[in-house]
View (cartoon, rainbow, N blue to C red):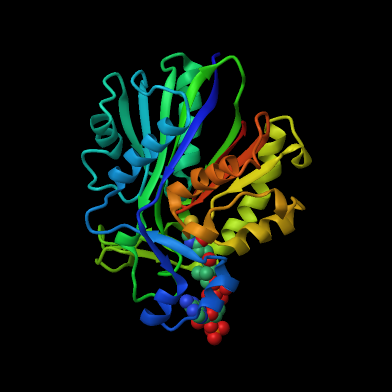
Length: 322
Ligand code: COA
C-alpha cells in the first residue's frame, strides 16, 4: 500500500470583505450578537464576476506560488463544493481546463461541510490503491449566492472562499485512518432549496437558498463530533492528548468550544477559520489549516485531526501528519 502526504496548501477569498455592521443595516441584529453567538467578525462575498471555479484556480495558484511543486503531472482533481458555477461541467473539470492539467481525472464531491475531508479520504484511497500518485483536493464555495439575506438566523453566517491541498504518494504515512458517516434523517435540518418541492414528504420552498434549523444542527454537531473525536484518535492508535491540532469544520465558534468542553480537548489547540471568513462550508477546514501553517503554529511532523460535518447530515475526518 502506498502512503500519501499533503505537500502543499493554498487559499483564495474574493476581494469584498463584509463586516458585521453590514448586517445591522439589512436585518435586525447587532455586531455584538453576531460576535458573541457565532464568533464571526468578517466574511468575504464574491462580486458578480467571481465564481467558485475562479476561487479554485486562485487557491491552486497561491499553492504553487508558495511551494516548490509542479501541478502538470497531477493525475486527479477532487473539488468539494455545494455552489458550483453550474452542476455540469464539474468544478474539477473547470480547474483541469483553466490550469491545463493534461493528465488529470476530474470529479466533484458533494458532501457540503464534510466534503473537503471526504476528498482527503478519497485521495488517500486512490494513492493507496496505486492507481494515482498526485491528487489536488480543493474545497471551494460561493455561499453568498445561495444565502437568504432576509433570514436573520442564517445570513450573517456564510462566506465565500477556497482552499487547495496537494496530496502526493510518499514514503511517509501522512494521512491516517478515517471516520466517515451520515445521519441522513437530518436532511430536512440543513438543505439547499430550489430543486424538489419536498423532502421526505415535507413541503419546502422552491426558491434557491440555504435553509437550516440552526439549533438542531448545532446540537447534532456537538454531540456527533464529540463522539467521533476519540473514535478517530483510537483508529489512529492515538489518544486525544497526542493530537497537536484539531481542525473541525468552522460553522460557529461556540460549536468548537462546546466540542472541546465535551471532550476535554484544549481549545487553544484548535485551528479555525470562522472568525475572519465565516462559515465557508467546503473551504473552512483548508482555510483554517492554511492559517495554522502560515502563522507558524503548525510544524512539520505535527499530528492534526481534521473533522468535517454538515449538510446531509454527513461527517468525515482523518488525522494527518504535517
Ligand atoms: N441577531 C440577533 N438576534 C438573533 C439573530 C440575529 N442575527 N438570530 C437569532 N436571534 C435571536 C433569536 O430570535 C432568539 O431570540 P429569543 O431568545 O428572544 O427568542 C435568540 O437570538 C437565540 O436564538 P437561537 O436560535 O437560540 O440562537 P443560537 O444561539 O442557537 O444561534 C445560530 C443561532 C444559527 C448562530 C446557531 O444555532 C448555529 O450556529 N447553529 C449551527 C448552524 C450551522 O452550523 N450551520 C451549518 C452547519 S455546517
